[in-house]
Image (tube, rainbow, N blue to C red; front, side, top):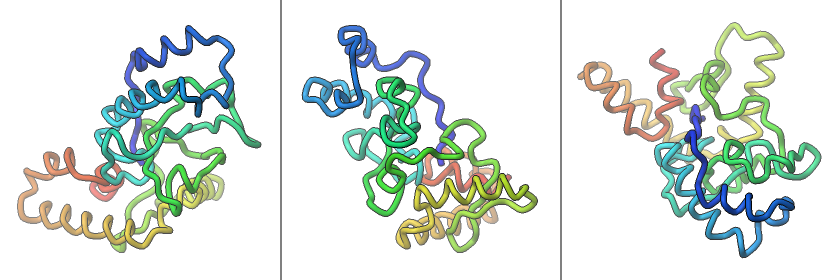
Length: 197
């Protein structure tokens, strides 16, 4: 998961839209009037996230995917007051098995933010697992977050992470001085970094 740090100044079009429409509801998020704002927000989130899906870390273009509400805008865990808050947005891929499509309106125990990867690791088989030594409560939070996002559910995603892990380990053995540079541009770089810490 990306250790997401939103830009200090939200998308200007978003701020202008919210200021001009003080009575917004979650239904307005899908309105025709909001579509140009949504495109710009998605591009800004893509830049904030280094061109990766916030949850699975697959490469994602600025016009691809969807804007996911980290805290859902509606449903049983809804936070409608955060529906138009930039810091509650993340750029997510569209895959029915994973990420925002799998999470739906669930409330994640672990959200994409600095330090979010501290309690899980990438196994050599490409699966994401809780680190050893966690309390039962923390282990449950890690497993629940991973499973809510379907991060081990898509076999292609698991296989791709396994291949990238093999590449990282090979570079670490052959050219350890190039490891940091490689990780700065690799997909899955946040979860791959858990293997090297």
